Length: 137
Image (cartoon, rainbow, N blue to C red; front, side, top):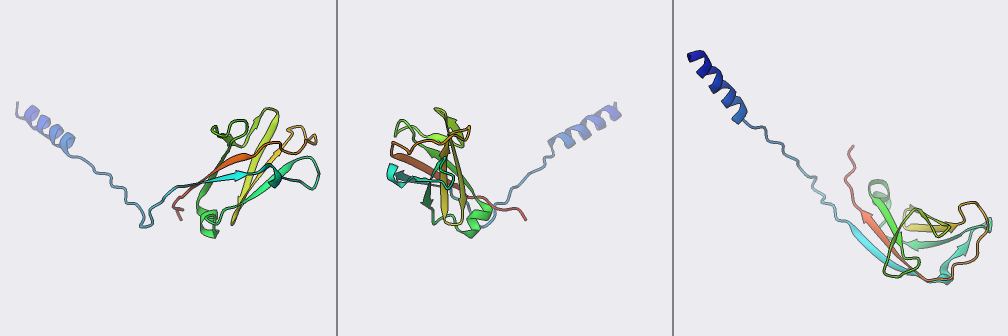
């Protein structure tokens, strides 16, 4: 009987002891930011090959540190100024993409089959979200 009682107490002691996982955040807390920009239709420029269009948006917050450590997400209003479509995607037979570098975001649109398309006929609202992140060395 003593063996069973000792076994029961041992199992209970092991079961009741707990491990505590503690996550220590780095000193530099992250803060995500969103920038809203209106791109007039006149701001779109044709690419060198004449088949697609692009616009450049200045984003001062995308400095050298953020460009290496952070992440950028872009969405754009296409048909409805109150509805944002995530980029990249193909919408209504037009391919939308973006790239970014220190100080800027470029947005491109083109025909997915490489056929030349006409100039944009609409002003666009663009939502650029900067997602801060702590780079793990």
